[in-house]
Image (cartoon, rainbow, N blue to C red):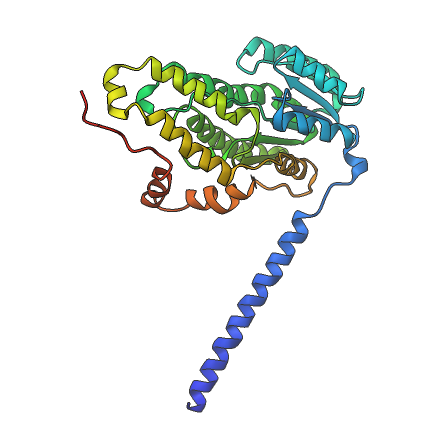
Length: 336
């Protein structure tokens, strides 16, 4: 090797280590920045409004933030859910009944929150309420099957946000929308994924609109978690009810064994991917609520981090190949 070649090689090695050093510095700085929290004294007594607190993520979040000293206003859909939550939390937690599909109900709850928070405003709005809806092939469904999850997961989320927004702006607070990996990848058919895709888009535009007001907006994208939303028995009962109402032509196309084979595939997917620790989602809410520098997006669950979210960045043909593995082959698509 000539002296000139050796000098070029030395420069390349030096450049490599220089770039590597900057990557390390940026990574350490990013981790340090993510770990910076607001002082507890600043947060104690601040108001947080959470929807969907009857069970699952919402109930765990309400109990967690109540223990941390926040003034929690927990919105439940049922009287039973509200009573159970009150029995398990401190006297500082307020439970209200809210149907996010009912505008008049949203208005009345907003007035209650406005009176409760006063000049402090609302530090945290956590839009967590959601339903799965019927999950079945598109040609099985009617427009009503699509409306149900869209009304709750998208229209309801937007409606609650619009009404609560002046209170959040007053506090220069935080808005946290719980979407799903189904908002970046069509993991199932039906209205659930369209509703979550819409919630993702709304969150992105809201984040940009709220920056001038000092309001931070975050999105949490959980993977598959064991909650009432993903109850396999409920999902299968809904699918069977739709199957029984289908025209014979469609039943012939899919075949009599379709439901059974589909249940087997879904059970395998659940065993492979389902998370049981719902605190992973609440931890994301906590960071978004209490960090100096909340993230725009959070992923919760190992399946979200290593499967669904990376897959969402890949070409469509790769996505189709992977997702089609979880679908049952039709008995006779040409049956009439």
